[in-house]
Each structure stands twice: as structure tokens, then as C-alpha cells.
Amino acid sequence: MLFLCLGASAQDTLRIMSYNIRNCRGIDGVCDIRRTADIIKKSRADIIALQEVDSATRRSGGIFIADTLATLCNMRACFSAAIEYDGGKYGVAILSKEPPAATRSIALPGHEEPRTLLLAEFERLRFACTHLSLNADDRLASLAIIDSTAKACAQPFIVAGDLNDHPQSPFIKIMLTNWLLLSPADHPTFPADRPTATIDYIATLHDKAQSIRVSDTRVLDEPAASDHRPILTTIIVE
Image (cartoon, rainbow, N blue to C red):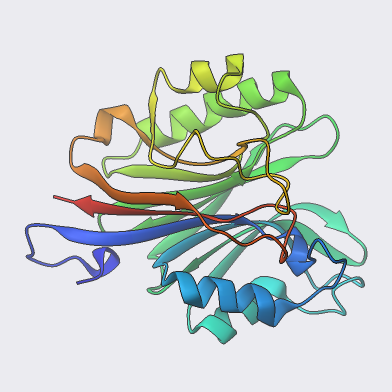
């Protein structure tokens, strides 16, 4: 039974992916939406956090990338714009097998460009996607907003995305005082062809983590479709 449609089952399994898709432009410089969709379908993920997503920009040929991926993968899409870009918008998206009951966008700081947190509300889960700033002060300010948002929710809260910092950084160490990583911290995700840095994460708030157990977590061996590798975590919710 899919967790997002949770009924009376004592435990349910959810496959979560986070992927900075670089607007479906690979290491080879080729923009190939179907290649990205094939990776998503192969993962069998139930819910996916996507970063660096174009919406009707000139460089994407006017295509709504999130909607197109959702159609190709037989999923639902929601999108949150961080900035106006190239005749359209640019931001993050969530794909899910089941439609969320509600979504909302929360502005996050960014000196180089504004950032955003996209929150999708399901019956027993809150799932958020973000792509944090390159600026350390902005990341800390964003963390305070994410913490506050998560603590206001009664349901288990999971955040996924490109956090632009490594596991030993002061920022991630501060984050882990309130959050538990569900993704591997010891497997690099960037750059995709020869990864040396872990900057992509899936995490849950400590206060609501008691019902969540990780059954598998990995960085997928996808060296070409983006400049990041996707991460995939399977959790059991009891």
C-alpha cells in the first residue's frame, strides 16, 4: 500500500528520491527530458524532489518541465518558482504518484538569487523540496524557516533537496541538531560524472522520526543525465 494513501495498515513503504536535474541538461550538454524521465521511472520512486526546474522558459522551448516529466512518468506535479527567468520561471518541483491535498510555497533568502521551499501536504506526511543558497548566512536563515515550518506540522515531515553544503560543514552539523539524515552522507552526489562532494540530502525532523525506519538508501549510478546524481531512500512508516 502506498503511504500517501495510507489506510488501516500498520506499516507502509515509501520510496523517496531527490534529484537536481539541471533542467534535464546532462554532463554531455544535451537537454533530454525523456532521459531524465527514464531515470525516475526506473527508480520506482513514489515521491520525488526536483531542483533546477524550468517552467516555460525560452531555453526549455516553452515547456513546463515538471508537468512534462509527470506526464511521462504517470505522476502528479507541483512547482514553486524561485525566480523569473528567460521568459518563464525557474525553481523546484515535487512529483508524486498521488496528488497532495494541498501545496504551498515559502520564500527563502538568497543573495545570488531568491530561493524557495515547496511543501506538499499528504494525509499522514508533509514533504518539502528546496535548493538552498550558495551563501552560508542564507543557508542558516533558510534552516530557521524550514525548522519553524516543520515543527508547526503534526505529521512526519521530510525535506529533500540540494542543500549546497557538505556533511562536515558547520551548516549541516547545526542542521543535524534537529534533523535526522535518511540519505547516505558518505556517498558523494556531485559532480555526476566523477562525484567528490555530498550536497544532496533527504532528512526528517527528529521530533517526528520515531515512526520512520530506513530500509534502504543509496546514490544512484547515473553519471550523465545531470551534473548531480539522484539519491533514493526507502522508508518504512510504522
